[in-house]
Structures are given as structure tokens and as C-alpha cells.
Amino acid sequence: MNLVSGIHHVAVVTADIDRFIDFYTDVFEIPVIFQETTPAFRHALLRAGSQCMLHAAEMPDNVHSSGLPDMFERGHIDHLALNASTESAFQIIRRKLIDRGVSDGTIADLGPVLNLSFSDPDGMHIEVCLIVDASLQGFHQPRPYYVKTVN
Image (cartoon, rainbow, N blue to C red; front, side, top):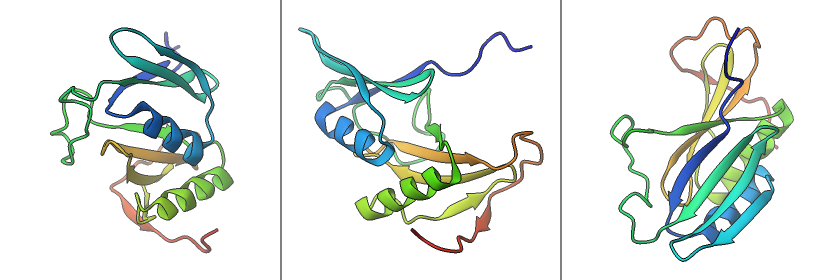
């Protein structure tokens, strides 16, 4: 038995919270459930699942408000990955990311998971995952995955 049931939230520093909210609400169709302006910063919570949230804090002058490009050189938390709810949702997200020019649409087959990478407006590396085998057995090195049609 696990003592935890998943990730509650991921906190992200951004230079422009309005741009952050626009991107994530448009591409992933996730709602903003809280916004506040304090003397120190503006912040918002976006519901990314039934029990998971993105917590964005606007700090334009913070050195961490822009993502770094090189994997495992990005800092303590390197990247985050979001689960697509269905195969159809995965394809809709993929199309939106391609249309915004933040992903070339390449899908990697990792065995029980399909993976799509992109960079958000702050340059943070994000992945969208589609679980295709709930047992999560048989992970392997990324292999090209060919999509029959692009919606």
C-alpha cells in the first residue's frame, strides 16, 4: 500500500502569470480555481486533475522565472509531466501544442506510456503522457511512435 496517492501540486515561478494562465487554460482546458495578488507576488492555482494542481507565482525579476534548456541541468526539479485523460485528449493537446509552435508533435513510445514533449511560454520543459498499459510494466528506451492521423 502506498501512503501517498499522487502529486497534489507543482509550484512554478513565472515572469508573466497572465501568459502562463492563458497557455495552460487554452492548451489543456484546465480551470483556474484561485487567484490572488499579495504585496509580494501574484499567484494562481490551476486544477490539472481531480487532485492535482499547478501553482503559478509571478516573479518577473526572479532568476528562476525562465526554464533552462538542458535536461538534468535545470535545477532541483528538472521538469514535470502531465497525464492526458484519454487518447483523444492526448491528440487534442498534441494538435494545440503544434499549432502554438511549442512542439513538433513527435511522440515517443516508452512501452506502457506514450510521451510528447514541449516547452511552455517560460521555457520550462513539460511532457504530456498517455498511459497505454495501466500495469506500467515494460518501460524501455524511447522509440519513435507513428500516428496514423493528425487531428
